[in-house]
Amino acid sequence: MEFYFFLRTFFIIRFAFDSKPFRYLIMYKIFIRPLLFLLTPESAHNLVLNLFSKTGFLIPFIKFLYSPENSEKFTLNSLTFRNKAGLSAGFDKNGSALRLWDAIGFSHAEIGTVTPLPQPGNPKPRVFRLKKDKALINRLGFNNLGADEVKKNIAAARKHLSSDFIIGVNIGKNKDTSIEEAVNDYEICFEKLYDVADYFTLNISSPNTEGLRTLQEDHRLSELLSEIQDLNRIISGKKNETMKTVFLKISPDIDKLSVESVYENVIRHSIDGIIATNTTVGRPDMKSNSDEQGGLSGKPLKPLSNEILKLFYDMKKAGTGIIPVLIGCGGIFTSDDMKDKLKCGASLVQIYTGLIYEGPFLLKKILN
Ligand SMILES: Cc1cc2nc3c(=O)[nH]c(=O)nc-3n(C[C@H](O)[C@H](O)[C@H](O)COP(=O)(O)O)c2cc1C
Image (cartoon, rainbow, N blue to C red; front, side, top):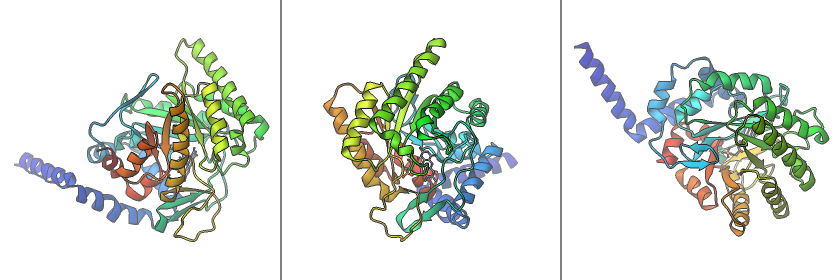
């Protein structure tokens, strides 16, 4: 008798959650989001991360509800992405909720930005919701636990993750390191995290670390890429492995000439991919009037990041080969947004702000 009761209840719940409006509206937009939005953006964020870093008991439930069905795969070097969407850097700076990103169904999560030493970031408040624009402004400033702790977190999480889930590590420099010494910080992170990262992203585009974006300048970029790829060659050679996949994350605020010099450097140093883009310091077409400083993400960023993506795609088309791959990031909220990124040349996409406003069902919605 009890068995049939449980069986029937299971199928009723299963059926209810299979109805898109139910799952989509009740679960996140009507129930969870209003509660989370009562908190400050950073408190809401930490609440979610803490919930999933401390316990794994909700993970099967999340997987059951949100994990997308079969989706088109993408292969690059030795990495096969099980679908074309990943979690963008900054959401999980320390790799504390990797099981959640795997359960939601992302093909990959980019952890970080990680710096060699732990650092607290800028004073709070430093993240702001612009609800009318479906956007965020942040000036976090690379708050993270540092390379050693992040390495431990990723290593500990690995055994609980699906074998096809890819972990990228996004690396940067500490606030107190001068721009002249910056390359050293990237090298420290690269070496320390080499064994736990499936790929690396060199972040030279955050607007919240003074001077960081100057690494996009031709000679500085050339030095950074050359040093990192030399190190890559040495470590992979010692381990008798192929070189680690390396991406470069760029800003939406660069001009066409800089796009060209970035692209030339990427080709010259055999970088595998370009992530376009990080947040913007511009305030394009805003409905909210916020004068907070920091990087803008979400819907208003989309046209700008697509424009930069397209510039890279045009250069890629004019050249030969399939490398570098382009990874589109900025303002993905719907399947049309994702299609637009693919049309602008992206082979993969990454999402941050869309997940805050649309919830975990977003991935299933855009991939199916
Ligand atoms: C609160 C916040 C923190 C972020 N932190 C990082 C970071 O540490 N490193 C990085 O490369 N990008 C960071 N980003 C940028 C995102 O990875 C992404 O490039 C950008 O938000 C555009 O995508 P979206 O419109 O989907 O959010 C951050 C974005 C937000 C909103």
